[in-house]
Length: 484
Ligand SMILES: Cc1cc2nc3c(=O)[nH]c(=O)nc-3n(C[C@H](O)[C@H](O)[C@H](O)COP(=O)(O)OP(=O)(O)OC[C@H]3O[C@@H](n4cnc5c(N)ncnc54)[C@H](O)[C@@H]3O)c2cc1C
Image 1 (cartoon, rainbow, N blue to C red):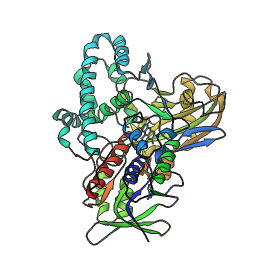
Image 2: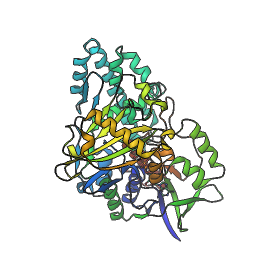
Image 3: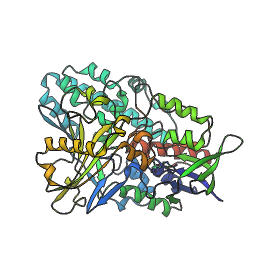
Image 4: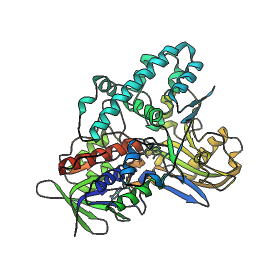
């Protein structure tokens, strides 16, 4: 039986960041991944010369000095990747106008002011507050991952916003419902409507793209995961693919002793990091009394939405922008109603990565990925019919596109669940409702949660921060100074 300092269950970004910091800090680290390739939601696949990202549109945190770049530097692999900047971050198509979300926040503010002159001063004060709150959150996050665990850095202002919905915040500032809809255009990035998502979660997500930029790795997100694994191995860490964790083994003191794998192997370790789905970790890998914790969390806050994703290879080019959202009305709440799913008027997100990245498709062709929110109800839906409905919407946005499709594939919430283990294909971990600060304590001192089921939020950067936090806690216990 092999013994490690740390076993990391899962190689999503949270697991990779954790393992990357731990291996480069000298701890004997093993990553166990049930899938044959690393990355979880970072995975990409190639069909007939077209490379599609399975899930992710774009991420932040990869520019020099930012978290993901810092960990890649620790691993000595930062120059193995090229990141392509996405600017505008998004183009949102509304019934009366299209609006670009410029990478530069001041340009975006001026764009909003030119469209909504009567609310110019409110636009300015809203963004002042968003900047202020975001910088407080960033200081707190950096303190936490550098090991100082200084929760006092989170001010009363940020705590206040944690308890409020984004809709309440927008209502404090604005009158025009169209302006409120424009500022809610990225609610699908969290999977909740303005009235149900916490204000702090939305501000953090919106501001992180302005402050840190929006990027995609050239060649697809799989490259980011692969480069992490290369760096972890270079630093003496080990990674096993195609053999998942079946059980977490506990000793008589209720501490993790190791794991048993699907193939029946046993490995021991002083610390276990779970990057796997929360429900799976506590109901299946631990079981017994821990299933109750999973039950409680599944009831409230519950898992975030999933997506139905359509991947299309297109002959010719498809517009000038690589990230778009399409909204048939200004009633943002209605798009999150399960009854609306796959109806002609539901919202859709579009990623055309080949706009910035000519490695994604053969010369003269483009890639197009359509994201449609889908809850558990969507999971049982007919895949071919759902693909067809998404393509019909693309046809309304880009007339004639249907006849230019040369490759077509799709993934339902069940597909996402099958590949990553995320329950019901949840895209962002927990629902980030007002007042929710993270999962309840489980009481196992050497078990850490890393990824979007932890307490840092959903999305790639938040999952990465959660992985860094788990690593930092382990280093603290081992008496090793964290250098992240
Ligand atoms: C359609 C879609 C679009 C998205 N778009 C964006 C976006 O544009 N920007 C953004 O920032 N975020 C986006 N997200 C969210 C983001 O992808 C996730 O929040 C983030 O990637 C989650 O990372 P994670 O580390 O928590 O783990 P995951 O990516 O969920 O990976 C978990 C890993 O654990 C492994 N695993 C599970 N069980 C076991 C086991 N028993 N043993 C071993 N291994 C196991 C899985 O195989 C998987 O590799 C999107 C998500 C979806 C679905």
